[in-house]
Length: 229
Image (cartoon, rainbow, N blue to C red):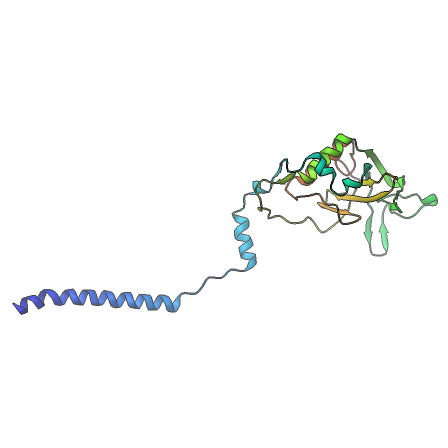
């Protein structure tokens, strides 16, 4: 009877013993050879970008700020008049101005670029000048303050190209007729720059500069928006 029992039990023990040994060996091998996966910041950015639908960066309008709230923000809070202008841009290299330059002509006449000195605008270099109406000012503040990304925190784009060749600007006048600040816009380079560094175009969603360009076209500014030299 004992011999019969051993005949059935022994194979079972050997079977479980071999599998337990294999399992232990597998655990040991896994622990010994598994390496923690690491990725670089660039690889992480690339993975996020590949999963990032471009539509998330689209501009959408909201009603976050009322007109009164928008006009209470700088630079609109100090503005008695806002003017849109266009002008030719001069290509600059160190110590040299190429082509149609900003060289000073008799009677302080300039061929190109924006010239504001002591709060006064030199008109000689301007191609177009338009004073904004109250309705247009409202539209401008809406573009700046009440547009945002379609999906919050989704922006993955860059900050524009390296060059800066502005041909358009918005000038802000106080009640004394003095220009206290201005915003230059380069649609070609997709960059902006202000005199005080306090003016921005707001959330830099995908179509923001296109909205600015269409705004200037609607105001009557064609140069730098629809055409250039």
